[in-house]
Length: 62
Image 1 (cartoon, rainbow, N blue to C red):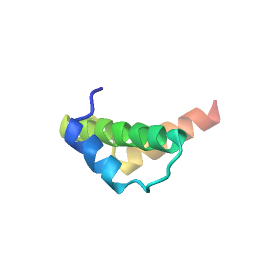
Image 2 (cartoon, rainbow, N blue to C red; image 1 turned 30 degrees about the horizontal axis):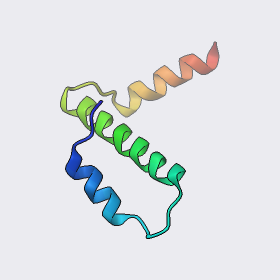
Image 3 (cartoon, one colour; image 1 turned 180 degrees about the vertical axis):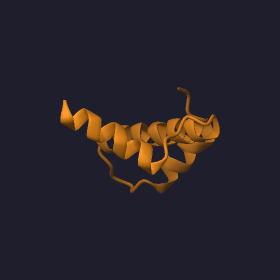
């Protein structure tokens, strides 16, 4: 998945002057995950709360 350059610029502006590379990588990772979630929502790939509980309870029972 690609991240829009403007979002990276915003992220960089919000960072403190001194920052660890790992922190930057984590923030990029989180930004990517959020965008993936927003895309899933826009494309209707979601579960209701009840469906999520049902699916998780089936996994826990295995």
